[in-house]
Amino acid sequence: MKNNSLVTIADYSKEKILYLIEMAKWFEKHPNEKILQNKIVATLFFEPSTRTRLSFETAANRLGARVIGFADPKATSSTKGESLKDTIMMVSNYADVIVMRHHLEGAARYASEVSPIPVVNAGDGANQHPSQTMLDLVSISKTQNTLENLNICLVGDLKYGRTVHSLLFAMRHFNPTFQFVAPEELRMPNEYKLFCEKYSIPYEEHVEFTPEIINNADILYMTRVQKERFSDIMEYERVKNVYILHKEMLKDSKENLRILHPLPRVNEIAYDVDSSPKAYYFQQAKNGLYARQAILCDCLGFTLDGINSNDKYRTI
Ligand code: CP
Image (cartoon, rainbow, N blue to C red; front, side, top):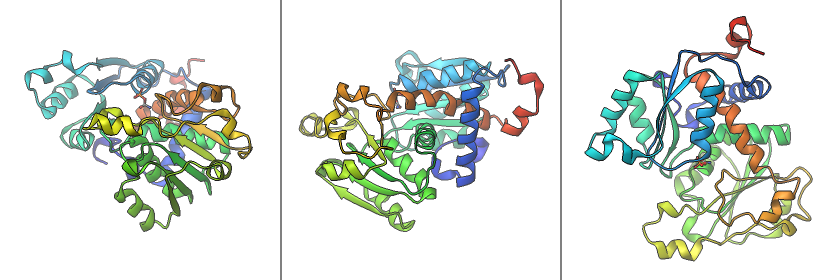
C-alpha cells in the first residue's frame, strides 16, 4: 500500500495481521512509550464518532505525539466547497499521518492516493473499518486463545455494517465458519458472499436468530442497524429492533462464547447481558487503544523489534 496507508484490511497478509496483534498486546503492557514524540497525528472526522476518534487520539497522546484535527466538518473549509483532495494536501503539510472517517465509500482509498503521508481509514461509508477489525481480532485472539477454526455469528445490519465487511476479509486467513443473521433487507451483500466462495469459507444465511445459532457460536458479533445509511426512514423503522439479545438467551451457549459489538449499541443487546461473563464489548473497545497504537506506529515505520531494542523509548 502506498505510503504505508491502511485503507482495507484485505491489503494485509496473515503475517502482517498476526504481527500487529502481537504489537497491540505489547502496547497493552507498555501503553506509555513515547515512540511518536515530535510526530503530529491529524484526525479528520467527516462523520460522528466516539470510540474511534477518542481511542486514536488517546493512542497518539500516550505515544507522545500531538493531535490536530476536527470532529465536526461543519467547522472546516469543506463547507465552503474545498475538495477532499485539497483538504488532504493541506493537512499533509502539517501532520505526519492522517486518520480519516468519511461518509463516502472509497474516500479513504482516494485520500491515500493523493496524500504524500500515510492515511488510516477510520471508516468509509458502509465499506470498510480496518482499525476496528484489528481491535476485533485482538479481542478474539485474547478471548479464544486462537483465531483459527472459529464459528463466528454476525448479527444485524450486514448490508451497511462496515465492521462486519472488514472482519470477514480479515478472517479469511483463519479458516472460520460464518453464520450471517440478518433480515432480508439487510443481508450480507453479494460481493462478500462471493469473497467467501472464492476462499472456500463456509457460511450460512439466516433470518431467524435461533437458540441453535447462539449455542453453536464461538463469537456472537452483534451490530447496530445503521440508521444513517437509510434513504427511506420507514424502512429503518421496520427493521430497527429486529434482533435483541437478552441474557436468558445465553443459558445454553458455549463456555468460550464471547459477545462482541463494535458499539454504539442502540437496542441490539439488552442491558442485562452486561453482567454476563460472556459480554466482552467494553473490553473490546478498550483493546482499540492498543490496536490503534500499533497501527499508528506501523504506519509511521516503527517496528516492534526497533521499539524493543531502543532504550530511549523506555519511560516506565
Ligand atoms: N465502533 C466505532 O466505530 O465506534 P464510533 O462510531 O463511536 O467511532
